[in-house]
Structure formats: structure tokens, C-alpha cells
Length: 265
Image (cartoon, rainbow, N blue to C red; front, side, top):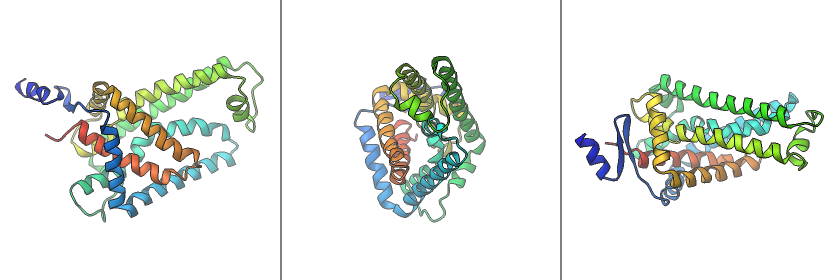
């Protein structure tokens, strides 16, 4: 109890349910982006190659959907990208950890980070995939309930549903549902994955600490979530080309967010 009281006096929020969480300000998200950019500058070959891999993977998945006449699923998968992005950036967290210790990145691999706590990372992955599936099912249900016109073909699905302007209630419902599930995913994953590769901690504790950090710092974390959406969104609307820089920038910055929110003892 004495230790918890000392942590609270120091400006943090201690809990018997996990590590101490620090109180931050609105300046911190901008600092995280600055530190993330510095990490890219220190290791451009490694960081940007990682970003290029994400661009290539995204492009191949999209081409496969178009070839399979499943183009209408692309908007849902793009939204899902935000949900699973914390896992896709695991190698970038590992790079930032090495740079933090002034270690070489020659043998730095995402697989190394995953193996460190693979069982608990698997649990966290399962939760994020479950949230993504629930979001898709909820969206399909709302679509079937609110879309009263003849069902559009695969070729004109996006034009009829999203671009015609005739289904504003449906779009509003999609937005609210997506926002709800995105908020849930952000709360439990904002810093959970970096924590799992950095500490011998279980997934449920990591997700609880992440949610506690978001709730304690809801305004700065709302700003941080907005910046992530804007930066990654810019990468997505440029036909994924912008992800070449956006993913490394946000990934490295997330590591520094974790360091500020849950400092080492």
C-alpha cells in the first residue's frame, strides 16, 4: 500500500491489477511522433523496408479481392486494418526497443519479439480478431435491416451504398458501429502489444493496463487516436503508398507512447 501511495503522489496511477500508469498531457502525442520520426531517421533502411512490406501485403490482398469479385469487402477490410495494426507493427516496436538501448538492428526481427511472449500475444490477437469479426457481423446485420432497395451487384455495391447519397441513415449506422468497435479495440490495444513484448505479463493484464491508461488520459489519448487515424488514413487513401512512411512512424511512436504511459520501475 505504501508503494501504491508513493506512485500516486508521483503523478501516476497505481493498481494491484498491473503496472503503474502515468498521467500525460496533450503535448505527449506530438512528442511520440517526433521520437518516432527520429527512430526512422536513425534506421531508415530497416523502418522503411518494414513499411514497404506492409504496402506490398496490402496491395496483394486488395488485388486478390478484386480478382475474386469481392471488391465490396475492401472498405470493411480497410476499417479492420486499424483494428489489427498494433499487431502488424510488432517488428517496429522491437526496433525502437533496440534503438533505445543503442543496440544494432542487424539481428532485430519481428519473430524474435513474438517468440518472447507468443502465447499471450496469441490471446491478444484473438481478442482483436474477435472484435473485427463482431464489427463485420454487426455491419452486415445493420445493412440487411436498413437497406430496403434491391440488393446491388458486386460491381456497383460501393457506388450505390456509399457514394449515391441515398442511404445516409445506413452510413450513419455504419459510422457509429465502426466507431464503437474501434474505440473498444483502441482501449485494449493502445499499448498492450508493446507491453507484452517488453514484460513477462499476461494478455489480460496488458489489456486492462492499456484500457486504464486510455481512461486516465482520455483527452490526450483521444488526440493520439485521431492522429493515428489521420496519418494511417492518409496512407490508405494514397492507394497504400503512404503506408510506406505512415506505418513506421506510428509504430515507432507507439513504442514511445508505451514508455511514457507505463514507465519502467
